[in-house]
Length: 156
Image 1: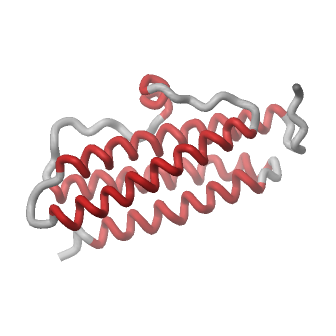
Image 2: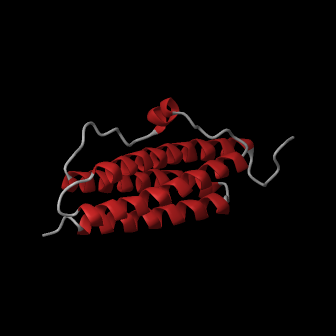
């Protein structure tokens, strides 16, 4: 059945492609944050262990929202590690970094998601896709705030 939501197929395709990158970044950061939650050590263990848990739980909910928006636009959501690796701007972290390095890596990941979300915004605006624009705005706000909170842990 044809999709008639007031956004033409070309624009929906462009938005879905951008959201697929956002989904890949979000899932990649989810996996990294969960890994760090499991493996963090040191004097900040309790604080970071709980903070990382809160963050990966939020990211787990976010991937569902982003994937559902892609589906609402009429396109399949990526869902494999190979697709996420190809689409994501967030690279894997080898080994088990020290706690402070974990924080830096997660700040970089949060900021990467903000940049990806911002890159999708013009296509959503041009197509008058308020639903996607709203999703992007919420994601940007959350990731900017999380990056700020993580950066604050690195100050002396």
